[in-house]
Image (cartoon, rainbow, N blue to C red; front, side, top):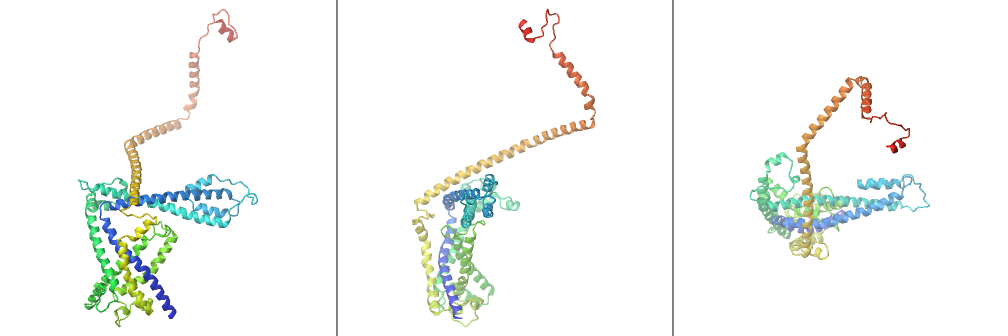
Length: 493
């Protein structure tokens, strides 16, 4: 029992340590991100900044993939089909992109004999290392390509929003038709006029109101984290709301209050996990582009944060008997996982005073101290008053404009081909049908009268012979002498 108690205390202590760190960031960053999202041009500038950083990462991924594929090509050319390690090379080639597989397959020589004494071949250990590098480089290249396309769509849409804000017709016009939805039901209700009012007029105000509501919840959480240990009087606002509902036996209100409380805490904590990026190696990427190691790391972190999150919720609402000092029935969680009072020196010290540090973390997040420190260390972060940020915004804007012009040329070419097909497609089809009909009619006549070909052959040959004789030059038989040698006759003339 003592060993189990120590294990539960260690797990809750470590989880509470991570919980307060992530909670302090999320309580400030979530309301601020919604407030900044309502500012005109803020999201567009941040998208330009992300585009410049992502282009650097994308170029690095492409260069790394080229280097790895060149190494794979050398290994594939050195290890032939009769080599014992050829199966390992085939496994590596299957992980390569299709264009590289076709390129390597054309340069293979299947008839070279295997001689271990003449050539030096890579070992199995080096092939395992190469296999790992191929998987990582291909996955990274694919991830950057997908993220770049998503970022382009986002940038084009934000530019459309900025352009349509000054529209006099109050109808949202897209630059590219590919961004318009194909769903007929959505097109019926979400018309260009409705889209203009939502994107250019209502959405900024909705984000501001939502930011104020989230900021209010954040203040309540910070206050309750600092005062939840006080039972006389009860200072935790969540505990006050729950106890008022208990007096009136309003169970629906209790369930809704508990749900909203733990829902907001979970959003603040788990959203921070989605923002964590450990040396560009462990991080969650959208659209199914996260690798296995990042999934394991994030899943382990989620599992580690869930029990202390529940324990902290019970402390905020005074549902833990060790906090409320009431002889009540323990909850299902405390009966299995234990309460805050597991070890006396941890329960009376760490569990009470450590959550107060959330105030310091919220202040540090509000003034962006972490972002400023990372920027000083060389990790470029989005800061409005930084010269490096302005340069990256200008670079990202140029990249987006270049991609925009490229896509416009593609759409113009597609439109011209579509118009040409609509204008001349029917005419070409009718001409093609007439040619097919003529060919079919000629084949029918030739099959229906097969003997005419042979009966007219003699007459046609005779007619050709007569025309040939008519075209021949007549000879003069009244000449004095006729020479048998054509050269002498020409000289005589």
